[in-house]
Amino acid sequence: MTQGEHPLFSAVFDDNVLREAHKCFHVFAIDCAKFASDFARSANRNVQVLASPKLLYETSLSAYIDIARFKHFHFQDPKNNKSDAVKRAAYFTKWIVRLRPIIVIDQERLEDPPPAEDPLALLNEDLAIQWSALCIAQDHGRKDLFLRTKFHSDFIYYLRMREVTTDGLLMAYEFLHKSAADGSDNVFMEFPLV
Image 1 (cartoon, helix red, strand yellow):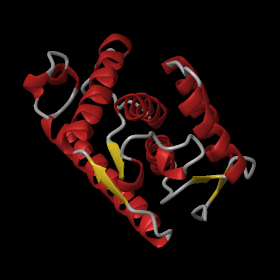
Image 2: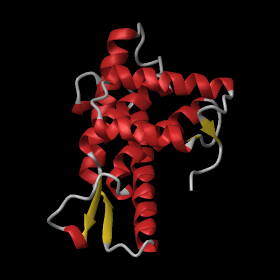
Image 3: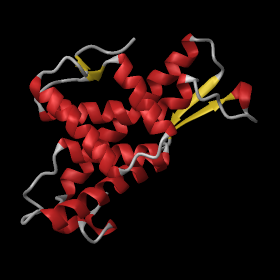
């Protein structure tokens, strides 16, 4: 990403910040696609899981355009005020779910979409949640935060089946951020879901 791609970028971001942010998201998404591909292979599924470089780029770019708009209108000095993890989580979730950068090609179902309960059909929603949890964890100086199974599955359901607004996402991630700050065990646990 370069400053020239959106008029607000030069006013609110340093080029290196954008480049690094996109690179981190890109690596994370590719790792998620590899994990899903390994999962599918272990379940003897004939599927291919890919992270589309074009869609990853569009996801990252769109999220940062939203963040740039937010910073431009809400901060006196947008270049020196960092948007918080809640904003990054909400805007990335919005664009991951909308653009769906993780693509699953099921050789056995080329004609039919995967059933809604198929875990591979929910990879983008899961990517959005995992990336957002990582943003929130880093804001608290932690390596990882993972949602409890019930909350995680409910959140995936809402992202997949309901129209969740950006304001709704901001509110949900603000709740998660406060829970993480309080050390609440009601939402988070510090080991991966199995």
